[in-house]
Image (cartoon, rainbow, N blue to C red; front, side, top):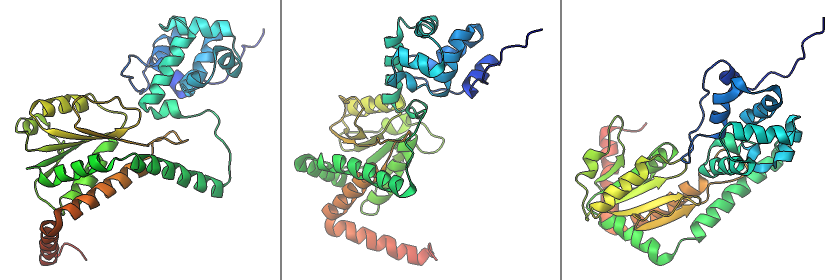
Length: 309
């Protein structure tokens, strides 16, 4: 009796699909992701298409980099099988599926930014590459600032009745950092959303005297443009700090695009931190004696309250 033909074990995403379980996958704003479509049909795939599906599930970003012929060669399948697979999961052709993969990369999904083969280099070379990538992003971000617009932003932060900083996911801790710097020199600076709270209650009181600083790096939640629209409707001016891939917001008074990409599958925020530091230092300088007086009072309270060792 002939033995059964063996094949390599499917990757985790394929295993989850085979067991009838959806693996956690990013939902693209443009519709169902490539791998979620494959997982939905995985149990019905013939062996010729399953080999290709296994490769895509493990490294979905490969679709953005390779042609159908190249993907077939990498997976040990055929170009015809690639075509049948993408049509089976709902795409008109391979080019449409590849555009979906590229959209996911632009959107910032680490899964789609992960490469099947990474460049091998020594530790010292990796350190140099890491520094150079951050320096490039910092240079792009800061050298792209216009002095007149930057001075307007600084003045707005100093003069606003209240300053709100809004951020979700990775952008939330960046918004928190900026708030902590600005509040050293002026009061009424708030971070949104607060833990366990929604933001409608805060936006209800927005006015033209307030300022909203939105930190909106990919991957952005739908609440970001919705909050910006509501704030703009109240007459609130908006400073929008985002990444280069973001679409322009019609609600932003000022927009600063930051460099966040590099050669890795995680985005880089050194440029964002450098920008926020640069902005907050300028705010403290603009506040002048009033800002210094507040900072002196805060330091005296730290001593009285024994806040630090």
